[in-house]
Amino acid sequence: MKTSNLTIREITPADYHLLEEFIYHAIHVLPGEAMPNREIINQPDINIYVKDFDTDARRGDCGSIAELDGQPIGMAWTRIIDGYGHIDNDTPELAVSVLPEHRGNGYGAQMMQLLFEALRTRGFTQTSLAVQKTNPAAQFYTRLGYETIGENTEEWIMLKRL
Image 1 (tube, helix red, strand yellow):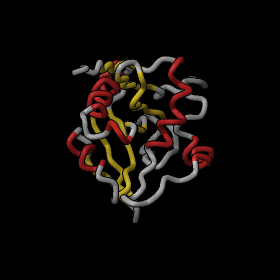
Image 2 (tube, helix red, strand yellow; image 1 turned 90 degrees about the horizontal axis):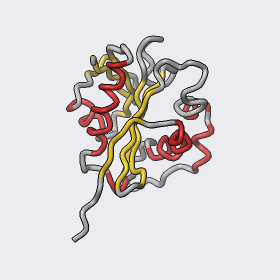
Image 3 (cartoon, one colour; image 1 turned 180 degrees about the vertical axis):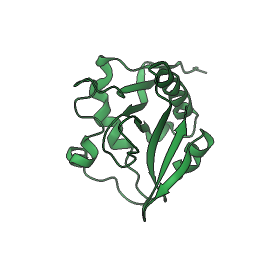
């Protein structure tokens, strides 16, 4: 029986090209629905989460990656952007994605714990996110300490104090 070798680490510039793949897998679709065309990641409201990551002195650009047997299987990252979960210009917004075949194994929580520590080290006191009300990941975020601070018809806006 082969044992898997899991590594959770901070992302480096060599990993930035993977952000587009993982933002695509972060898109929530209801069970039975097909994933949208990959071109969706070029839409400005989605592309803002990955475009020019770690450039223009974006203080909130920070992230972690999970690798299983050397292969990337998940990423969690933050940016201070005017995205779906924007709170203010001092709160990095979270994006997290684990490839579908690896979900439910705790990898997301491990990545996020490393990311929270990296944010604390950089002087951040909180992080935000938006999650669709139909997305079961909302329970995951609650378990990690996020609290709902607002909502619209489709999403909850959540905040975690670090």
